[in-house]
Length: 153
Image (cartoon, rainbow, N blue to C red):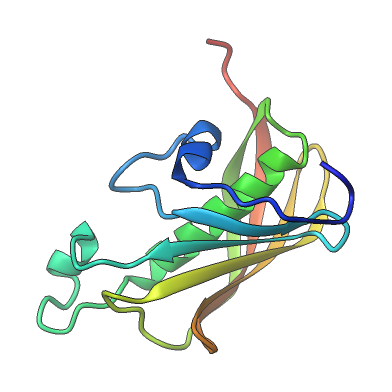
């Protein structure tokens, strides 16, 4: 991959090769953009009424739990880490700072997930993360992570 804006579109099959998460906890459906020079990645999660969390999280007015929006952002950041060359590492959530939940996410929405690197080293780093539905911010946070060696299989 070249060092500028990548046309990189990853579908669910590609994401399944990168992330260890599986249904019902895989919260990224597609990667639509990666820019290594500017240090960001954009993904998306398509919301359907079939999501397990909608069945019990305000069933008469279903909304996505805020903590799952943060998890979706963290998973998007983990794809970026992998693509940056850390295939032999796992990114573990270290901390979440300044999290804010601005607008609800409902069945039928497309949640756009954007993570921008604040800093990253071979030990860990931090992302500035934002989730959007259309032009409206749904959630935002600073997400810290630590990188650990993947176990040998």
